[in-house]
Length: 628
Image (cartoon, rainbow, N blue to C red; front, side, top):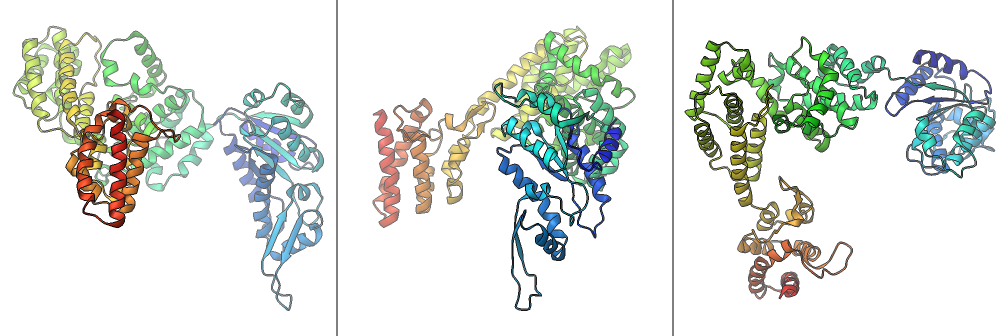
C-alpha cells in the first residue's frame, strides 16, 4: 500500500502547477514522518549536485505558535542548500532575485575579486512565489504534525493554501485527521472539512509497516548489538503485532533503550555461554512491556508483581490473563519467559526513572553451571512421583531447619514452597516449627543491617524470593506470617535510619550546602513523602551541625541562612509563615542547642565571620520565638 503512495507522490511532484495538496494521514507513531523522510531521501539521490535545484522543504509544525515561526522554519530549510552552491550561484540568484527576495551585503577587496562574506535576509514566500529560471526542479513543501501546531487552525490552513494556490508549490500535509478536527474552533470561518474539499486533492492513509521500518531502526544501532537484533527480527515483529499498539516511534525508542542496557552489561556477561539466551529473553520482555506500558497499561508492574500474584484477586487475575493471552503463542518452544516478574518490574522501573539495575541479571548468568536446588524441583511438586517428592522435600527441609540459607531471596523462596506444601498437607514438620525457624533465619540474615540502602536491598530480595506462582493459590498462612515478621523488623530498623538531610547537616561543606534545598525535594524511600515533610534537625547531632556551620565559608553561611529562611520563616511566595508545621516544630529543640554553640563561637570572631554567624543566630532566635 505504501509503495502505491510513493508512486503517486512521484507523479504528483512532476505536475507544473497542481493547484491542490496531498494529505498523508494516520495515528501518531504509525510511521508517517519516517515514510516522508525516506521518500525525500530518494528524491535527493536523484538531484544533480552541479545544478541549483529546489530541494524538498520539510517543516514540522509541532509547537509552533505563529505564522512567522513557520516562515522562519522554511527559511532555515532553504538557506543551507542556497549557500552550499557557492558564491557564483548565490551571486547569480542575488542579481536576479534580490528585488523580490533577498537583501544582501558583499564585502569585497579593492580589486573586487574577493567575494568575502554575504548575509541574507531571506523572504522565502516571495522566492517560492516567483518563477526563477536560475533555480530548477520542483518546489515541494511538506508540513508535518499539523494537529500539533498551536497556530489558530483557520489561520494555519489559509497560510498553507497560499503556497498551493499562488506559488505553484507541491504541498504535502501530514497529520492525524481525527486530532485536527478535534482542535477546530466552533466559531471558525474555515473548517478543516471545507479546506480539505477545496485544497486537498488526494488523501492517503499511512499504514504501520514494521517489516519495512525495522531494518532501518536496527541499522541505527551499533554493530556489536545489531546482529542479535537482526537474528530476532521475526520475534520483535511477532511481539509488536501481538501488542496491537502499532506505534513505530515507541518501538524505535524501545530498541535503542534495550541496546543501551545490553551494552552496559559487564564484559564477562557477554562471554557467558548463556548470553544469547538471556538477552533474547530480555529483548522479548523489553518489547512486550514497553508496548503494553506505552499503550496505557501503566499498572503492569503491579499486575506482575510477585506479591500481587501470590494472592487471589479475580479482577487482577483477569487483567493479567488478558495480557498474557496475547503473547502466549510466541512462547511455544522457546525459553523467553515473557512477563517474568523480575524483568517486568525492572523495565517499568527503567521507564519511570531511567534506571535499570543490571546487577540483578547476575542471577541468570550465575545459574549457568549450577544444577537445580532441591526446592526448585518442588515448584511443580504435583508432577513428581512419591520417591522424587520425598527426596527433594527431605533435602529442602533439612537445609531449611539447619539454617543454611545464604540470603533473604533464597530463604523466602524456600518459605514460599513450604507454605504451599503445608497448605496442601504435604509437610511432616509443624507450621509452628517452620515459622519459628523462619524468624530465626530472618534475624540472622538481617544482623548488622541498619542503613537505608542495605535495608531496601533486603526488601528487594524478599520480594524477589516470593515470586513463584502455583496453580492452587491458597491463603499461605506461613508465608503471610513470615512476611509480616520481616516487615515489622524492616520498619523497626528503618525508623532508626538517619535522615539523609540530617546527615548532610552534620557534614556540611561549601559544596553540599548548595544542595540542601534540593535534597528537601527528594523522596524518602518506602514512606513516599518528601524530606521537606520530615524533621531534619531533630535527628542531627547538635555539636556536629554547629561545627559544620562554623567550617563553612562566609558565602556558604549566607546560603545556609537562606535555607533556614525558606524552611522556617517564609513561604515560597515570600509571605511570612504564621504557623510552623509539626515536623518543623520538632526541629526547634536541636536548633536551640546549635544556636547556643554558634553564639559562643561568634563572640570570638571578627568582621564578616562574626556578621555571617550572627545573622544565622538572630534568625534562629526569631524562629524559636514563634513557638515560645
